[in-house]
Length: 444
Image 1 (cartoon, rainbow, N blue to C red):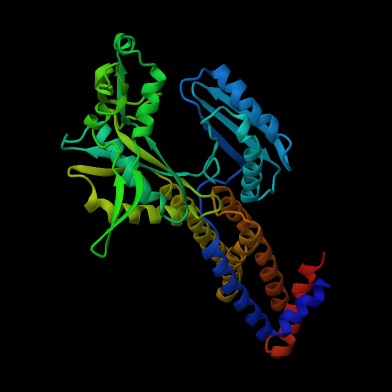
Image 2 (image 1 turned 45 degrees about the vertical axis):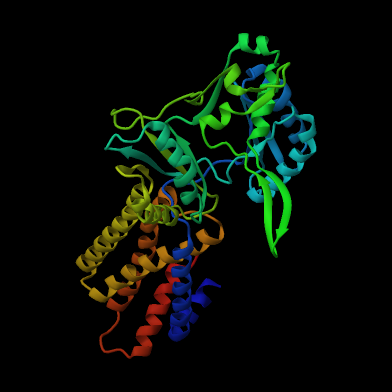
């Protein structure tokens, strides 16, 4: 069978070149669409469930949140393992699925099971799915640096959380932008227990009054002179004074009891469990960009850089975005390794064949085969979902030696057969001799 294929290819050069041109074009398309990354994704197919229940101890979080979620999800289809972590005020559940499971199918199954247990969780507790990313989705990180000193860490964190984060999350291929560092600004009400006793106001009434006050009241419309006027009550909190003037109730004389009568209101930071520091110069605010599952890391990073350049004019005065981690450098170095290995292989092979066979045209055979074979290898990589990374590209670089050996043996055997023939033979006889030489090498 192999001998027939060799003879057919040798006698039908036009067909072979046409098929080769089609395959090379197909390979270029696969190369352009194969995701690029620095390291292979060997992580499990997993879905992360994050639940916040502030102020509760880890054992309460374990009993009331983590355990009910785990016991429900172990029965989900294609689930291999479920792991839970409970800490102060937070619960993390990792649902590990069987290899080959589509991540979006897995996420939809997890949502179905979470909907069934929502009523069994404490009031106000709502589980949230983590980003549709893998453990190697961390592709870019940046920091906000204020050289002017005109912005506090709280101001920078507010800009990161409410402006910059949403710009970057709108980029195609970005699953999440996680904020790090700085202070999360809060409206803090410090209640005086003695004032609560004096006014006979329960603490829960204060909490409910503040919660309900941050809202607009909608009405109907009033028609006057063929014009409709909307009726509504503005109630969203915009300043500390708005919180101070929230009514809690009335005293015995019917006088309103305000928040400022039972405590003080101030801006303050949320509780921190860590901090971010940049180059030993002090605390900083930054963000971590997580790539969506199955995306091309290099393309996503390039889009992030372009978006950062676009929004630089709108940054607060004196604030700069400094890149602290960029995987594109590692990806480009991995590609450069393959390019260097391929170039060195072609030069060495050409020199060896020229020196030992003294035939320039014979050296062109392996030189042409190498880049074509490398290109064709990207076709199965694309359809098998394998990214171009250090390991896959390194495997191609190692396989170059085997490809070179095969081409050298073919050329050397054909060259030896032709040397043993008489000079001045017809082209038909030369082709026949070359075909026989190729068949000898091609036999199993």
